[in-house]
Length: 302
Image 1 (cartoon, helix red, strand yellow):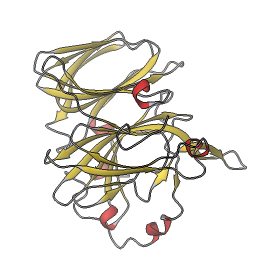
Image 2 (image 1 turned 180 degrees about the vertical axis):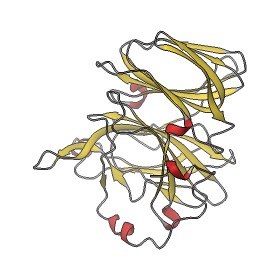
Image 3 (image 1 turned 120 degrees about the horizontal axis):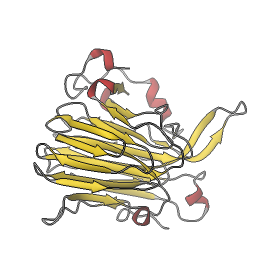
């Protein structure tokens, strides 16, 4: 598949007859694992799903909802008015789960699922379980909310939220995770992962720009279908990262949020920086004082 600036973006597709805001399927993405949807429910509306042999994670983006499942009942999940006002709450469900989501208030949520074989316990992830990392420096300072991090008791899924302040960069220096690489001692140096970026922008008429590009180590590059694309992402759009480096920048006046969903060879975030730009890490002067974006319990910062 030849990826371009057009087919690396899945545009928002809200319709009056559906709760669906945007959807990614492996067929649309040209990959094997990640399914993704975002939904908006009005108070009292329900959404039902039974993914079969897939593990699943649901992240509350705004409002409050309750979930009934063959794995348990979880009332009143979600404690933020929007992704820009507080930490998330989420639910992990193992394969062969069912769920019925009922909106306690008008709410929005994202749901991702990937094929899995092993059994893991269902787990409700409250705000107090979220880790917060302030990464980078200068105008590449960003906030990362760890929802399902490496080491979480699941098979494949990894989910984090990232905030990029006005006029700043994230996923920088550019990094990639498209080749499985181990050190001589067996340590994992780079995982082979699919990834999505689900964007929300404030104010919502803004945008973010993301570059996706491969180098000579990429399987797509070696197959004669390299990627070098600039993507213009708006509120509720999804960027696909099948391979390659993928830095992000926001214009002045607008803050970008994105939910990253990753899955692949390992339940990991192990990546390799573009060697052209790694020097930047040694030259940061300070952290951006605008991050974290909202007040965070200091005990949760890692």
